[in-house]
Structures are given as structure tokens and as C-alpha cells.
Image (cartoon, rainbow, N blue to C red):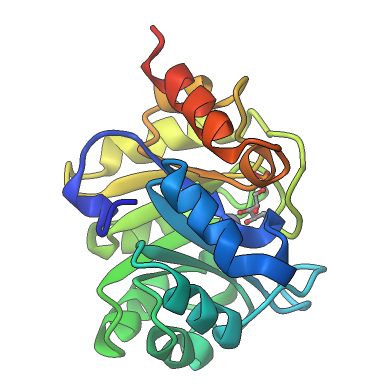
Length: 226
Ligand code: DX5
Ligand code: ZN
């Protein structure tokens, strides 16, 4: 795995542990680590912002103890600023918050930095107009485009995410990254790449497969196919 995905400009595949078998998390992580995933994506859900509850700082810390990989923590919670210190203490490398839950997204980015977050991301639901993230765009490290309604893995890719990705990509500097999350598999990954996406979050198309290394290799092949 990559220790810092910002060091590379090549497309990166992030394995989302939401679809891992939590009864053997360390070996699941080791498998995708060895299998060629570039970093890990952690989906934190509070049962308020999304209709599902996943895990919090304790599992983030357990993940941290299991790997040196970059931990990209996606906070699907209504109070990201309140809980950010716990996730940073647990070993998160990057924190991504939803613009829907804050009054002032630029102020939220600045507050996350003040709390010690080195890599700050902003994201938006499929129903949220892309303009909503513009005020914070200059100061974020990455933008996450949701290509499903967040809450569960294994949902169908929403193609409406692609024009959004294109709009955001045009506004990003070369040192900022564009990430996509939801419904990414062998049939959708190249379409997202063509829209300018740098980082691809994948849960079920890796963890629901018997051979995770082969699944990651197949995704990567789609990225390089012309
Ligand atoms: C969706 C989560 C995603 C999810 C992706 O609520 O934010 O990260 O794990 O799952 P797949 O890749 O199965 O669509
Ligand atoms: Zn996610």
C-alpha cells in the first residue's frame, strides 16, 4: 500500500473496509494490503446522517494497529467537528466531512486543520448541488463525489456523479485529488476515470470477491485500458 496517496498522481484504489468481515479485520486488511490496494477507506456512520451505524474510533484504532496504510476516514456523521479529535487520535490520516452538516464549509476545513488534520476532504450527497462545496474548494486536499446515497455498500452506481466530477476536476489544482465513492466496480471505474477521478473507493467489488488480489488487479486493468 501507499503510505501517502498524495505523493502519487497515478490513479489510486482505496479498499473500503465496510464490506470486510469484521470478525477477522486484521487478516482482511492484510489481504487487500498484499493484494495491491493503495490505501484504506473507513466509512463512519452514526445512524443520524445516514440510516446505518457502522463503527467509530475504536475500530479506526484497530485498523491503524493492523496496517501502515493511509487511512482515509469518511465521516457520515452529523457532528464531524465534535468527533474529529477522536478519529485523529485513533490514527486517521485524512478526514472527509459532508458539507450538508456544517453551516460554513470553509470554517469547517480550517477547524479540522486547527485540530491537527493533515489531509482534509469535503464531500456531498448525490442530491446536493455541486456549488455547495465551492466556498471550501481552495483549501481542501481532496473532494469526494458520492456516486450512491451514502449508508450502505453494494448499491448501484449513479451516473449523475460523473458530470459533477467533471465540474469539480476543472476547479482543482494539480495537488488536490478527486475521489469517488459508491458502486465502483469493473464496469464503472473507467467511466469515473474518464471524468477526471484520481481515487476510487471500492467496498463490495473487492471484499465480496473470493480473490481480493485478483479483484484489485482487474479494477486496475480497467484503469489502464484505453
Ligand atoms: C457508501 C460508503 C461507501 C461504500 C462503498 O455509503 O460511503 O464507501 O463502502 O461500497 P461499494 O463499493 O460496495 O459501493
Ligand atoms: Zn465512503
